[in-house]
Length: 234
Image (cartoon, rainbow, N blue to C red; front, side, top):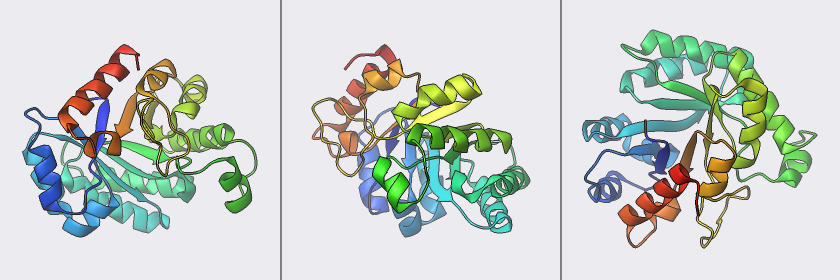
């Protein structure tokens, strides 16, 4: 799977496929809640038929039995990466992994856990959510729980990736949203970084949305960001 993932944060099938028509090669894409809830599993199948790798970003979080059923159902879509919230706890993650194995007909997708959303800053974590300590400590604790539960990696910001790798090993995957070129605005994400910084911090996969999808030339922006990440430059 390509290590630069494009977030398809579009409102419907038409706008999504119109965007993908601009690319002549298969790329890695992220399908999130807005598009999936609007178009359902058929949009996943259509994009897969077009030759793109898919990260299905639905952030499953519920009681263990429900999470298991959700992952069992989603496994049939043959995506390449799937996620759930670490907030749900170890039992939920373990049950979800069982569901993934029950529903999969072939190779399992890479299952990853969401640690601390990149829209959170320190005040939100401590004062609103009520979790003490630093973001890095909390993200690493959630990542440890995810690994113990059988997951292959986590979603985190660039700034937690190095500590997570140091604690859990290089093979435990870090997937990081909040990527912008130095000239671009951060919008609603607070813990953002450039592709160069992501490379320097040892990030495995970057997820890029509006920096590509809202660009006047999405293909050029995609290639620029992809090359910047691969080569470690801004």
